[in-house]
Image (cartoon, rainbow, N blue to C red):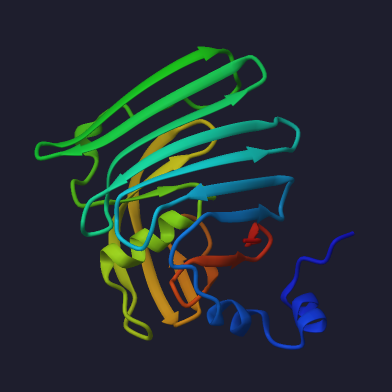
Length: 218
């Protein structure tokens, strides 16, 4: 069994895991997260610190293995203005194209094969808030973009914001609200979609650890 707790990190590295992750910084280059709740890995490719085009690929195991590929285009305020996602499993495939315009959001989908899950996309794109931040399930870089878009300051009060959640692997688009709290330089707390969740951050604001879900490996 592989240890996946902060206690194990402290034993092997001699310092608290949160402190070690905050000390690290990754201003450019690829990012890799390992899923700890199941077998899985996500690779994200980015060119640098500035907003722009970012791509990600994930392979997830479990009783229904699937893969995903996404392509995000960010504006100068770190908000996602266009996102395409493809998920695929045994005998099925789904595509989602989400984009922000002056009139609001547009949402298009394609699907092939049969899979037991909710439909992709959303019934009424007009109901999506034009100022919402986009969160892709279990893709932690989207949380970093949300913090930057909302300009969260360390130790400041929690901030509520409209969000658009994309459920993986179904690509179901759900409108809602979330509260983001940059508790400290190395800790983010998010509420609004089930129980509150805490994330460890590095010096760049990249999520490095979510208990029971994922940890960064590069």
